[in-house]
Image 1: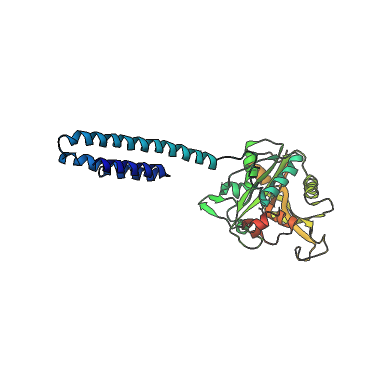
Image 2: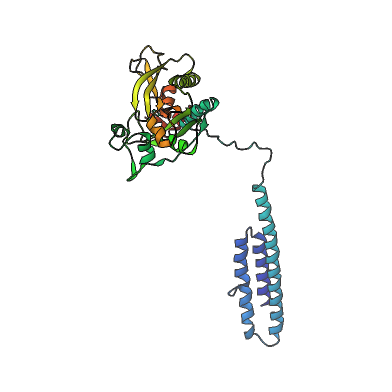
Length: 338
Ligand code: DAH
């Protein structure tokens, strides 16, 4: 019996010394000291021993049990500190390594061009104004002298949110929102999204416009021309020519569309300008007296001009981009060029 106990102790010491991780150690504990373990087995057999032998073997078995238990504890502590050292080693941070440089993004071409347009007008003394994308028919059409049966409404192909409420088809409604809140003099530019039921190479159902409005005493069409010429020369270059073509808008009278000499062929004629030498860039005119009436402005005292341009169109002309869809397909090979 004694010999057997010594064998168990020797084996336990060997196994414990060899254990390289905590799981193996736990297996050893179960094997020797567990409920069905080898030492427990011996202790359970004590009853069959003679009365003299019983206390002797019992004491020896308990000693071995304590010894194995201590050996397990010691090994456990050693293994635990080893693993924390290993962890410290693998987690070590090399402070001398260069950092990971974040890949900086940049603004999309459309807002970049919109900002550039607004900045030029800001230098000319205009302030920035904005209005809601979801707009009432009153602001989008009626107050801009466009009654419900007006033919100009057709060309706008409007998205209706519910009766009387639309996704604005242009930034012009913000003219009225500004005039309602301010007395002249007024000089604002309005960047923003607009929406039309329209989709092809040059049209997107959502696109951006920049609107302009200036109201004061003694404002003339010459002021409008001077401002737009200054803008075009700053944006496209001072060698670009402008042409004011008579046009119709319900909210301006007289109205005009502005063409610039083709930025690709300088007016000689090419595919981009369809051999005309000219590219249309915006609509403009003198604010209609009826619009002033809606704004409660005295049209005997004040005069004003307004203009509106499509941001994507201007970006496309400047960079010779063939289709507006390039601006909305999120192809980084395209977008990263700007
Ligand atoms: N709102 C017009 C459009 O979307 C553009 C425009 C034309 C704006 C003349 C104006 C203007 O302010 O005076 O087609």
